[in-house]
Image (cartoon, rainbow, N blue to C red; front, side, top):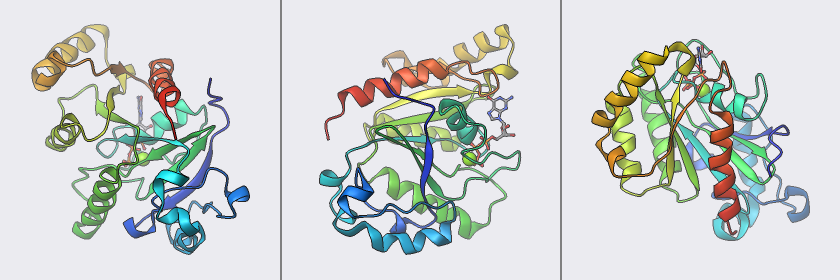
Length: 238
Ligand SMILES: Nc1nc2c(ncn2[C@@H]2O[C@H](COP(=O)(O)OP(=O)(O)OP(=O)(O)O)[C@@H](O)[C@H]2O)c(=O)[nH]1
Ligand SMILES: [Mg+2]
């Protein structure tokens, strides 16, 4: 069983080359310090500290990595806070585009990875390109054991959501879907959205991908989500 109440921020990276390929399990024992920072600029210095682990993912990464992906403002940071039983570990804001770095949190033997949200129309072109590169190269690095794909329960998936799901469906990374902001829908509206979603995401008909209704306001779906993560952790062999 995972102790979900003991999470802490481990690292924060704003540019792809800063992300180490792997983290040592125990920075003290191995002599390779993991950058502990909440500032992207401070993280740059941390790159030097990863030693051999920087290039040796398989030997060094003894933790399961669980990533959280979704459009800007869908509720990734809020969901992570709820999952980890914390009020403000991951930064939340009503202004989209809050998470501008890839943020790593540790809890027991797991890395929880908060990704920058995609699809924020007002972001500068250069910022969009930076997010895109950061996220894409992170997701194609083969380090993620499970990805939680967040979709706003109230709306049909966006074009960006569909692109992301296409990538996942092709077997890139095992994934589950979390339908966020469930507290904002009435029972009937939920049933309608669930029915519509099967048409919008055809692959759901033939797959057993879990679709979890979630609210960071009420905590609905937290136990189910933790259960999915615990399954992956149990099957993980470093
Ligand atoms: N009612 C309700 N509001 C939510 C829920 N989850 C998130 N919100 C609100 O939605 C807004 C965005 O939440 P964030 O958690 O910052 O979203 P994000 O996906 O991390 O956004 P970026 O970092 O911009 O990608 C905030 O105002 C949250 O309070 C939820 O389950 N229910
Ligand atoms: Mg965020």
